[in-house]
Image (cartoon, rainbow, N blue to C red; front, side, top):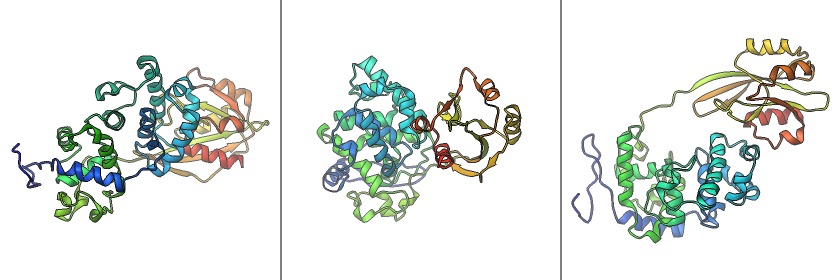
Length: 370
């Protein structure tokens, strides 16, 4: 690639764009120091533990939602050692409502590995970080660049949007070779000095979150507007390009809330795979026929049917049929549902409120208990 003072950006099907090296990093670092976000709770100290927890929480979840969860999590588990010692149910309980619960299980396993394999300290290099449970390239890059000033590019969803618009990169990011090329271009944009890496990485995340937003980008407020191909073209919403669409499906679940004469609920642990894996839940059935069979076996009567509740997941929409009763044969229930892998138990209100429960189930239980 010839070294010139400026690049001509072309976005065609045959010629791929070049990166605006040097200028972008300078603009971005200066902008972040004066206009970036500096009041997020995980920014108080550039601690790998806090950055790691925030990055995992922020996957598929908005900052405004994460802040309260992060603060509660830090109060309960202020360091990686306390998290490693914790019971997984306590971790899932604090995670309840954030969704994508495999993140919480990996978070717990990762903390244990950091303590047992790395002496309680996070590795400072990009490659070793990726050997830890739940840490992929983007999270590893965030930790390495923000906490250890390593020259590695982060490439989360916000950053992909910023870079594709900046460089007019109109190639399909669902194609792995294009994604790898974008990663290479991101590397070219990094500041030459390692001391600027924490500010640069935070800056590009801030830019994607507050200025170069998905639907209403504030192009005139962008520090890189003079370099941006998408702004020059007048069509920033054309980027990024990702043609692979997520197929959404609908699934109905039948759920029964059983309460005994002591006001205790019958809860079971969900299987380790599938929806709500590893969480506690009321008995769940895939169809009304399966539900009716269960009702007959435990002699359940006086069933109260609530209006079905819709709950959206990433790839599907759930229709939850919620039924509750306090009239059933408890002995038959206990014999029927004490499977070794999932098990079941009577749980009082004080206890189930701190367990890891699926968010819609928690809401329904709260409504039932009120």
